[in-house]
Image 1 (cartoon, helix red, strand yellow):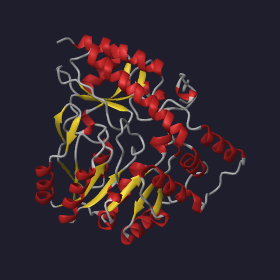
Image 2 (tube, rainbow, N blue to C red):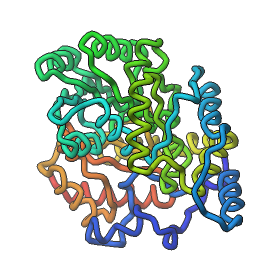
Image 3 (cartoon, rainbow, N blue to C red):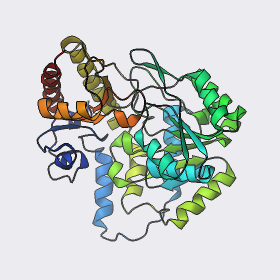
Image 4 (cartoon, rainbow, N blue to C red):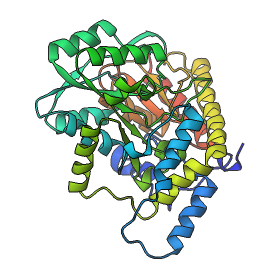
Length: 394
């Protein structure tokens, strides 16, 4: 395992949202931050070296992407996921939220119905309501602890009844950590094609999977499905590069692709910043060994936390996710909900966690807990969690 994961990294001078915004968000700067989803580790050394060399040039003017930039993502996809992308169908975007927001604006009009399956990333809700679209939900079913499934009958009923135009699909599913099976993807694709529903597929977590799970994309299900799907991809979650603000849209449908390019150019967000080109390209070309070490370390952290909770805190529910580096922890045994749980954990456990309520139905009694941290922070946080849960009483 890469030594970078075996030490505690001081982020006090890192201008880190995760650490520096604790007091503003939680009212206490002396907490262990387990909330916003980035990692407390440096990016691959090859990426750091490439960024430093680029920065040393000292000229940070407007950028031009080489053809190797998009090709690097295509090669990575071929190697890791065994399917091909056409680099001509890739579009730059500053980030995942920007990507699915712009896609939604191109694919729908104000007042159109847009479907999501909560509990799911809160950015979906903000985008739908913030752009004047109608939010439609079909909550996931938890058939057993940690086993979430789409409620297929309701899913299709909502599409028909609400005249849904777009389904925003989180794959892998944040926050529950689900990796969808091929038969599930085919069912989603067929229902959406049957009812003329476009799909925006959020694949930000696709590289971060555990226990033999492997992300499959709707893009792998044939040309008709590709034409009906706008996929959002990035290296930012994979290699801890979110602060560089670079992402990708993959759009096979020419009409949709040209409309997206036009919208992005109108907003003048069509260029990478001065450092993100070399960072993203180098990550895809030279970051695989780092990622393998990261996956091993993150899986150990997640397993340690789940085992601790099962042994020491059986009143709360946690399970090993198939993807993401966060735990979705259920506190329904107790009377607290949402922000009340978050505040209680901060007060008694000195840990800053993600309130589950904004993730929609099914999240009211949950917290999303980010474990992409040092082992030192993990162990202290688990002890804090124990103190806080014991203070909840019966």
